Length: 117
Image (cartoon, rainbow, N blue to C red; front, top):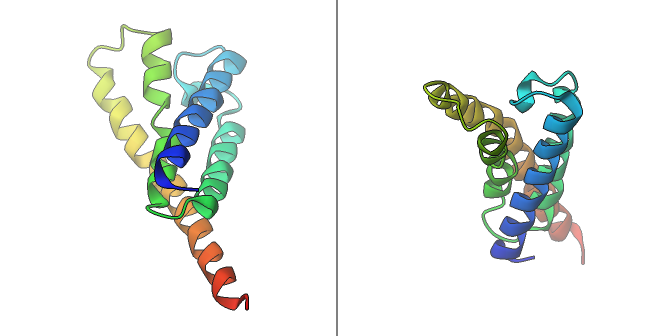
């Protein structure tokens, strides 16, 4: 899959995951949800899969699946105020394992392609 379809799919999948996390937990921020670890694992697993199918810049898929957390929070709670910068910092930190996961998926895909005749 090329970059742009993968990127759009990552954004849509990320928006769906974080919307479900908010609605399931009843909180404004997904990381305040009781089941955040489940949704975060799901996002990292999806990053791995998208990294494996994206042919170029697979690491971006990891960031793009975490990034929709911000718009979901702003839609549900537009009064974040100065905590918005703290939220941006959390997004950057939370995107690192997803980026690593997407990169790992791409590396495994490349290794399998090398070994195939």
